Image 1 (tube, rainbow over the protein chains, first blue to last red):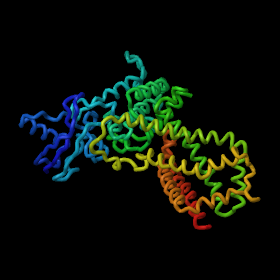
Image 2 (image 1 turned 180 degrees about the vertical axis):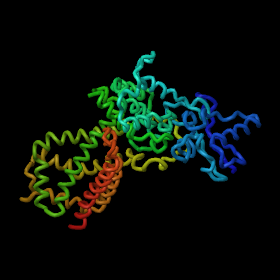
Image 3 (image 1 turned 30 degrees about the horizontal axis):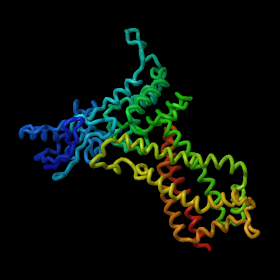
Length: 246
Length: 223
């Protein structure tokens, strides 16, 4: 298939970017979206132009690096996937595809389609861990009785790959789905409950400090999340913060 | 605790708490208005009670005013903060793909409700305060009869006012269609009960505005 691509080009974090049009031809419908981007970049390199910078790593949907806003949606029109898992069969021959970086004040553009997501790392460092002795005398995790329901919910929350699609798609650029998932995966388990009050306070404080917006419960994040993290996690975070303050 | 209400999550909780109070108030207000459809006397007596009972006038009314002002001011503050968090706008953004129109436009339905409240205050609340506390007439009487029912009927003779009220109530319905469940979610009480709450929210956001519309339209055609 032949496509017209409208891509955000921005030289560096300080430059003023703009949309630039490109044409790609003979794209196979079996290609992943990132492979289509590779074809474009090869074409640009061959003609002596600067290739389009975009984030990618594992290309199997688990690293959370690929981060494109495609035709007005995080990771494009498909559901439960990252951009590397988006297939070109989702588009038609002759389509014009708009490709933009994640947009949020807390995710500044570094170059072209790459944004700085270190804000998520700093939120994690503020409390997204448990303080256990790992010097070899750690208690066997299986010796703690945990209900199947709690274990499953914690595991579901822990599948968050920190890609930032929730922030990118939120009309308020809120990071509450990410923080909710990270708070939940620990709050549901006995190992995490020891530090739960301090964790939720510190992570929410860091989230606010980074300049993310306030959740208005539109639910857009859970629809666009590649890992199906639900709004229940935000509700749980709200409960945890209330509990920690009373 | 003061730190809690300065946090993003705390502000959501504060918005939800004021919303709960306002949603409760709407039920009471509609319950009084509905009586005007079938009993002039009952409506007059309930209006007189609401308008002259000291507990309602000097305890609940100030709380209500605070709730309304707080909900609007906090709504604007959060909207501005959220706009600031956005950074550069998308060239193409397909919001309809993942969320409802109501949820994305709470600020606009809210602004319309604010405009309606201004009209409503000019129509009823300010003249009422004037009669009771400036003129000092606490009797609720006019020419030997209770005045409340006649004042209500008289206001809804004007078709422009009826149309304005109906439009405002449609927007109130849209605001509630998202706001009802949203308030519960913000309080962290959605877990496990999502479907039931959504059904109750849907019913509430239709029944309450429809009730007010019926009162306005009934009196327009029934004079």
